[in-house]
Image 1 (cartoon, rainbow, N blue to C red):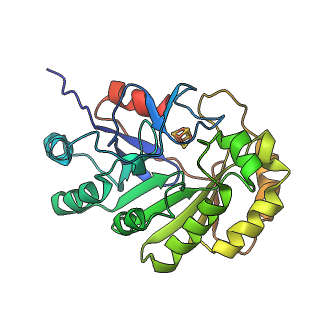
Image 2 (image 1 turned 180 degrees about the vertical axis):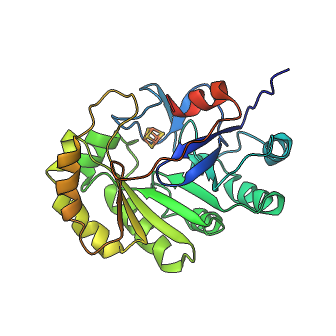
Image 3 (image 1 turned 90 degrees about the vertical axis):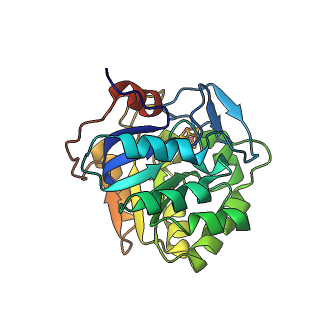
Length: 257
Ligand code: SF4
């Protein structure tokens, strides 16, 4: 009988993380997020929340992880159907995974809760944090990320800056460029320079969603604004061939691989 996974998915071929095994600590039918990005591959229905709570017991995740077939994995990555930091047991889950597997742990976050000291402490347990920064003002945050009302651009920026100061792991900024923010690439690059992350990931939505990706020439031009920083671009990345342990559970979290 084919094994069914409820909380883990992939591994997926990530241009940023190689062979990445996903953990979805939310694992709800609807997307749980405090953003509803115009390019979100999970569709536009969202349960907006800024409150952290426990959705999945850590023991269940570890059980699945330990029962999966032996597969080559470069990162175990917290992502899935929404913002992973909204799971209140993220820190506990990172600790448990590190005891169970000798694989580095990554967290993909939309950066909204980095101002919170408890969140900073939990995230500091991860080896790699990939923090979203598509906007350059509160207005653009509402236009591109369609954030929950309580979220302010200023507190996102302060949160990333503060987190960077104390973090010993690798911090990347991931920037999704689309029609709405491409003219402001130099402004976003100025902010990125101030933050001085270990890596800047320049992206455009190549997987199926409601907005069109920018062509390679435009992304190449945008990349020039980030000169001097360690930049990787989605069009230049080498994509590994990996085979998910379950296609169905992977599609639910990620759209078409
Ligand atoms: S932050 Fe991620 S999950 Fe949330 S709406 Fe944006 S793309 Fe979708």
